[in-house]
Length: 129
Image 1 (cartoon, rainbow, N blue to C red):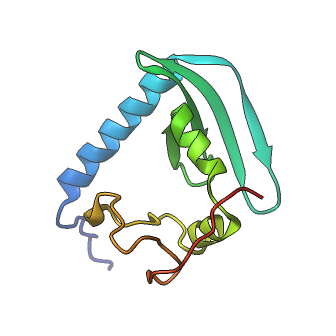
Image 2 (image 1 turned 135 degrees about the vertical axis):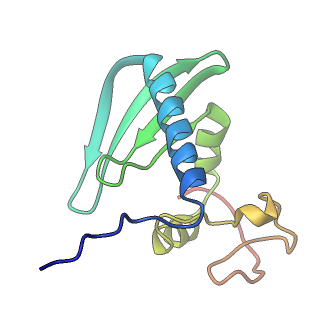
């Protein structure tokens, strides 16, 4: 006879569940302001769906990964900041999937002048490709 299974639980489960509910509500609110049809871009490695959404603070691009359920809403300045990056930045992001390039504990502040894969300083000559 098989023993009954205990329900899965973990420390911080309630906090995680609350954060998931907040994220779902935020995504739903963004999608309520969607303009037009989404643009879907895909290849053999990834698929993303991009919506233009209007918020009280202006337009954003809502970029979603249907496969992972991850999403981000970017304002025009954040989108422009993508053009300031070089290919090494994107390679570092791809090399650390589902994680931030710069840890939240730093609040986005880089004190050594630059960031490179491995976290050490380096001279970076910015620009676009």
